[in-house]
Length: 147
Image: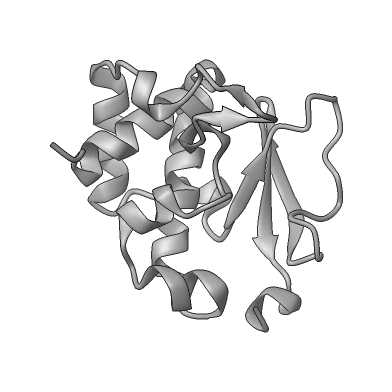
């Protein structure tokens, strides 16, 4: 049986940001929802507002990959066991909740160092906006609109 949007969202929240506290988990959920509502660019054209498509889009989230660097990735959404908190945040996001501090962000990543790069992803389509716990969050640049 395929996972519901709620189940997928709870699993990716747990996998991508469980150690980041409530705001970190809400920020990750917000980025996913932002991708479903952005009115231009690649995500608009490819996702058509579909939460499942946003989560499962190829190459976007390490937690969706079962293999990373040629090796099995045990930290993937299929191995997660979401708890009530993850479902609560998923419900919050799926009913329109957006964390204000990442309201327009379309990307995030953990740089595994104390500073965030100025741009992400490659191609300078996102510019640094804020950092929450270990993750850096990026808003779209004008270049993103052309994607």
